[in-house]
Length: 77
Image 1 (cartoon, rainbow, N blue to C red):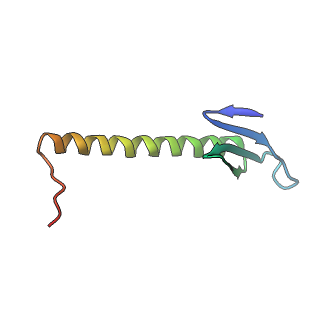
Image 2: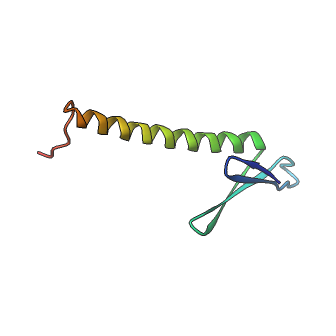
Image 3: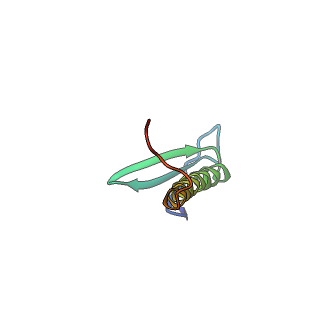
C-alpha cells in the first residue's frame, strides 16, 4: 500500500494486467474505489481532479472580486 495525496493506492494485479492498482478514499463516510491499469495513470487522475478543483475555485473567486468592484454584474433580465 502506498499513499498519494489523500488516496490509498493498493496493487491489485490480474493475469492480463499485472500492474493494475486500486485507489481508495473515504468520502462522506462511504468508501470510494477506482481501478487503473498502472500507478502512473492513477496519479495522473488524482492530479487532474485536484487541478480541476483549483481552477473552479479560482474562477469563482475572480468572478466575486470583479463583481465587488463593479466590472461584472449577475443581474437576471
